[in-house]
Length: 299
Image 1 (cartoon, rainbow, N blue to C red):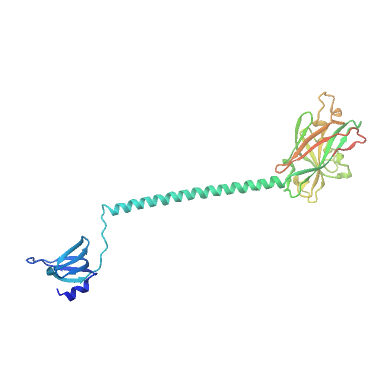
Image 2 (spheres, rainbow, N blue to C red):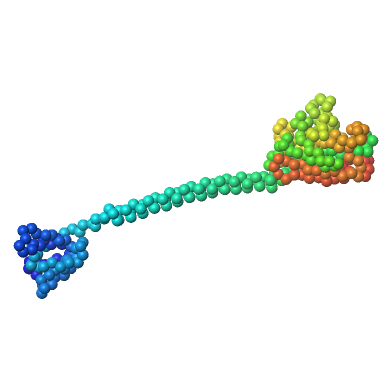
């Protein structure tokens, strides 16, 4: 092959057809024609087998060829690829499981935090307050037989169900009272005073005398929407009297009867009115030294 033609293929990927003298069949070599040494009569070819030299005299033809992709060995590269794929899939699965656990944990913590915050807000913002305490003595004005605690909700409080409230009284022992839902009425019923308020209009039974050593009654002083008398619900702006029968609660251990029971002069009594949710209204009062009238202002 002439020099002027071979120079054009230097640096190109070519298919080189060679035929040794005395052989009937030609051979084909593909690769990049790197250089031509005319003095020694060889060309340098970079093929898949590596860098080699071919005799110029054996070259029959040279033509450009398209470079083929390398064929991977099943015993080496393919196995490595499968192992890499397995590791990758395992990492994806681990990441997915981890993400799922984190999302579920975050959601659970978020729900708990929301619940706790709502309960905390209710506990802080809701509650009761005792505005005043009035006593009602026996006929001899020696003991206080009944108490009336004027109660309202604190500012910003949620509605409070009086039937779920507890009243504690601490004197010689600790007593716990709950609302008798049949002893709830409005003030001035039948134009009668607070301590003479009947259970219902026209009834001869009073809330005061039907309260026991475990129950208290309620008289609504201000209840525009009738939530107190209808559902035992105390909401913002409502005011009620909690009626306590001290004669029953502070039972005389001598057994001389309820007429001698009650809170004597100069004696102290304490306790708390606790709603279902929110702050309690505590009291700690002492009876006056002298009962000038049957109605006694204690707080």
